[in-house]
Length: 429
Image (cartoon, rainbow, N blue to C red; front, side):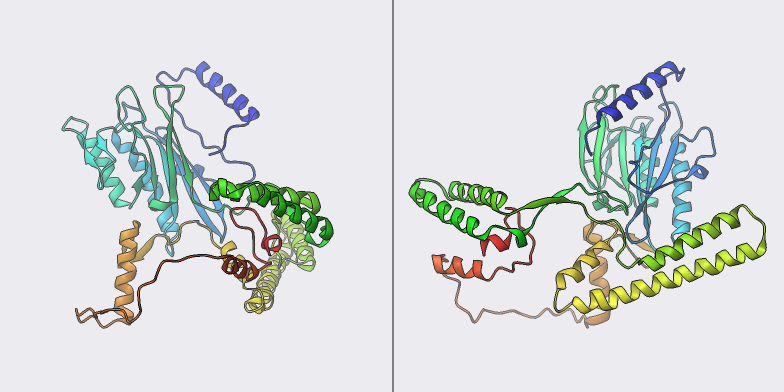
């Protein structure tokens, strides 16, 4: 989560003041705010009942996938059957996405507190009359394979966890934190592992190595070397010597190598100028067809739309086969950058489906994959092979000398990116 800007804080203060002026009694109402640099889709059809206090929206991810978000509130006096509104909407989403499991995050105040969420599976706290509500909620989670991520108490007065975060995959929600709020409930902050289709990355520094002052940098490197050995490095720790060397070298890089601030391109490289020209023509025909009942105009729009689709598919195919596929041997980094850009989620293995069952936890996914691979590649006779003793001698004590370190530095690839130290292989080599 990012800190709110001053404009956002002012908007929230106005919203809070307006809310207080209304006669809501003990509170109520939900809203879902989406940053303006993300592509979002609202779902007003999911909230047609006045008693349904929930708001749905979908965020467009990379790879033409969607992340479905729901903000939910159940008043304390309302029956737990209000959760059925979410169940109906989830059933609608699963019906729409039959070929894949949708990514869903539902969060809000459920006002069901008699559940201990730190255990796996969750357990009931006591046998109070509200236990039936807790069982109703747990059954709902089991029916739709949802994971609850909040384990701390969100209402300090009662010490119960009333504000929940439900997700369709355990690794979809991470970094859940509890902060003190303005009401009797604390604020639940969490991170969603997803890659939106429109993310304006902040400008970052790029050094222009083709314009570097080579003589000046070599002189600075020689001075750094002399100062380092004259400063009695044996009296410092290894980390202290590294920090001194890194700081001096980074200062020399900024001094003798020009740099500029740049942004990542958001346009697709296979969308050429000719395709953009045809897309503008398609949009004009779409506008005419929308405001007109003339069949020839609508037919022209459909013909132009299909033409643009064919051009996009052909251009994308040529880009992947020639530009990306052709660089697999010469520049594999370019190929894998394209592969990673097509991912819509940060999680390694998404939710798996096998034999009409959903597998969301890491253990269940591993077992499902193991069962599949066993059935395809391995004849399971129940006998495991014996590895036996190794034919090699154990590894002796390892030591590093100057020649070994020099050899590793000389083998660095100058075209690779910087590591955590932000020092380019071009400089170290």
